[in-house]
Image 1 (tube, rainbow, N blue to C red):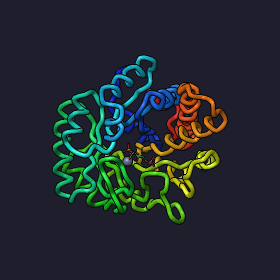
Image 2 (cartoon, helix red, strand yellow):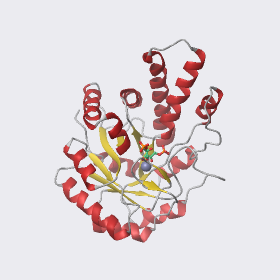
Image 3 (cartoon, protein in one colour):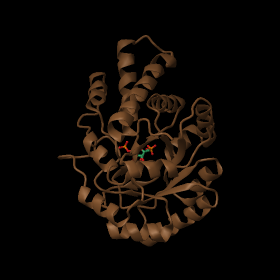
Image 4 (cartoon, rainbow, N blue to C red):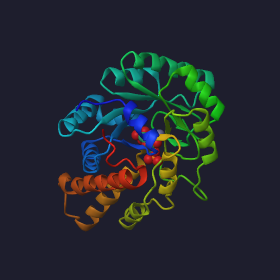
Length: 308
Ligand code: G3H
Ligand code: 13P
Ligand code: ZN
């Protein structure tokens, strides 16, 4: 099956109150782990590539790895650019075969965010490509787009932003943040704000970034085998499940993949210090990605079996 855009995935997710997982990829093993999980759960999938991942792997490698993955599956799969920093990078991904792009102008003043988003929307829509934008700021660091402090999304501005840009989905800030250290105190999300946004934009698909749960088993495994990721904390899974019932159709997960792989590889080296064949440690790492993604699909996102 060829790559698809997210429209029918999100229509169904919105109606039935669940979310589709958007998993960050940057190499073959991660792509394989996610694809295997999707196949076992019969779940729709979004595989997304950040500007940094694109630089690391190369756009052609990513696109060709995805083509290879699609030869072996009937699942609906979206290839999405995550946090596109400018028009040029979005254009390159659209021209290169991505079916969805994010233009992240969230660090810009409102009018400038509107202008760049509109420009990407015009280019993308002529070519049948979906556009996600962001309003509000989500704390944390990606390679090319940085936010020091979270600014929660204003619901009225969100409506105006969507009407004026024509973007297809919107990433909102309600308390999540990127990376492995999300909350200093108690973990909480601003559900009243989310409900307000959903009520003034009914039927419109929302996106939640920074949605890793930072499973403590991986944190402990990393630390046990020489890592230093003390105090890492993510979004509790029940909060993510609730967001999926309130108009959030896409939930972004990267950090949990990194932790699952790293924990496994650390353990492998600790237990097998003489190993130097990459297959010996990448195989269990890929398996750990698969198991973690399966768990998300089934127990957190609620999208098992949701293929038409
Ligand atoms: O939202 C950010 C993603 O986790 C991508 O991170 O820019 O380090 O690839 P990256
Ligand atoms: P995490 O760092 O919580 O995995 O968030 C990933 C993300 O939002 C990618 O855009
Ligand atoms: Zn993000």
